Length: 520
Ligand code: ADP
Image 1 (tube, protein in one colour):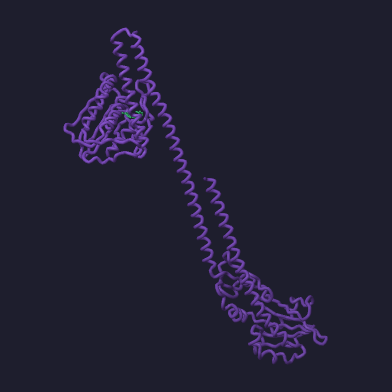
Image 2 (image 1 turned 90 degrees about the vertical axis):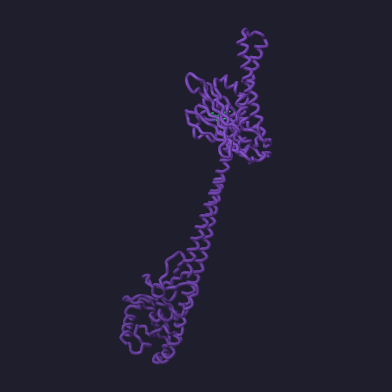
């Protein structure tokens, strides 16, 4: 079962882990596709403007460049700030600018272009008529230029479109990505500084891609708008699954433990039953052997004195008494154990029953040097009782008191006090001895079937014999009368077994079909 719990936990966690990975992967893939699409969209927009520039910037009509371009520039090429046409010697042949009067900046750019940008363009390695881009920082400022090389009538030209990055960030990006749908987007430069858009949580679902062609030093980052919710729900599911698996494991382990307890209980009961069988066999064999041995001696006529003969007869009577009380106990016990024990209730006098029980054990008590002190309250009210069963219960209690009791004083014998009196709504029967007492831990258990006290006292060095069913029967009989049975005891001083039988309507059920196990 523990192995099953382990396997269950392992496979559940593994499946959860794999599913999570797949889910995560699919979210990542769709976010990546979105980021690529957005980056391509930006590229396409800039390249479309570049193509317009390329169509307009004709080296054959250099002087007309400004006129041809500027009127449509705002509409068709909004991000292009200036167009320059240069010759082989890197002389600027034409410079069309939308800036109007801001010549200072234009001049700076022209110088920058000639001194540094053209070198970085690596023109020698590039074919003609092919659109190229240079995206780089110069003196802390970001530049984007698109350029081509063109041959017209045998002369070589370089056409350069200078893009206004500020305008791209302020106008183009917001218009392009006005409708972002469910996701958040930003653009960061080569140092990771945000150029456009809000800061994004660098969670597991945020994806960054390089803008492929134009602003290639920048990265576009996209994260699903619900990334926090997704992460939270993934975490919640993980927690829930963890709780469920832990709960299943606890249930399995608890089940295993319950089965173990049941098996252990059954095993203990079996041990007790085996002991019981051994005890009962012994209990039956010993008195029988004695009865037979002394009977044969008497039969053979070899017993010399009358005194001896009387002694042997006493032994035979004594042992037969024990034998019949044991057999009665076992038969009664077997009856209730099979669930067939039925009681026959009738109006009766508990005092009479108790005196009769004491009477039955009178001679046995005498032989064991024990005095039975019987005190029955006069005029006890009648109750509904099964007097045979109740007598058996009291006999068992008195028998135990004689068996386990000790002399009260060195000189005198032992005394067993037996009383019956009314207390409120109950008749209370007490059997008190001055024996070894019963340890607190055992005071409840000794009423269970087959259970004998672990510290069952010796008498004169010989272990006291028994079967462990006497008190179980007592309890069963008491409860069948609607009463109780318990013991008050002080170790070393003695025990008082107390049996209560309710007066008035007899509350107990006819016990037909009710097993002793239900009660005992
Ligand atoms: P048995 O006497 O055959 O062992 P019982 O069910 O009558 O079985 O008693 C169960 C156990 O309770 C005994 O083994 C003994 O340890 C303890 N016991 C019963 N009566 C007394 C008593 N009067 N004094 C001390 N111990 C007792």
